[in-house]
Length: 167
Image (cartoon, rainbow, N blue to C red; front, side):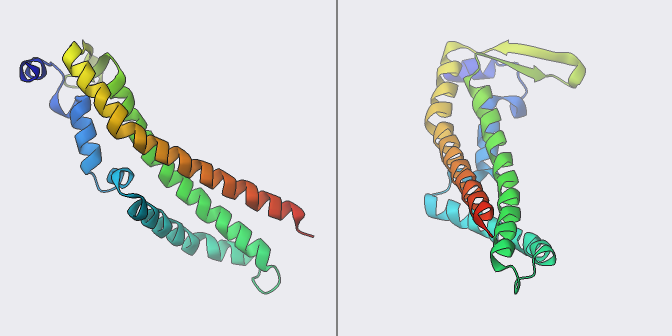
């Protein structure tokens, strides 16, 4: 039954939400959200460490380590956190986009270009399947990313508080 409803779908294969989900979950970058917690944190730590290679010299040029070690550390961490935040934002937006397409009862698609957009209303079977995937596969990823953003926001606030308290 589901085979016939999917085959009757006029949406091109690469624009079908289920196929977008599969492509995202198999991609090198976006699959980070599907990793176990230890591997996920290891990836973020690698990005953060690499970001320090960029922000560290900039912070050292502004705040010599010998004279202002706390300021150097705070500004280097701020720069690394900003780059990590941008990476996480890209990760979040990709998963949120696919989740939105899976949850919608009707999806927009293009047959051959931007000028011929169409809307296809999902069958009840396809809609239930898509919403189950969005709820049980993608929502935990988005929840983890939101918690990561909360941790980064806490880091920003703590750094700001320390900066404020510096003599």
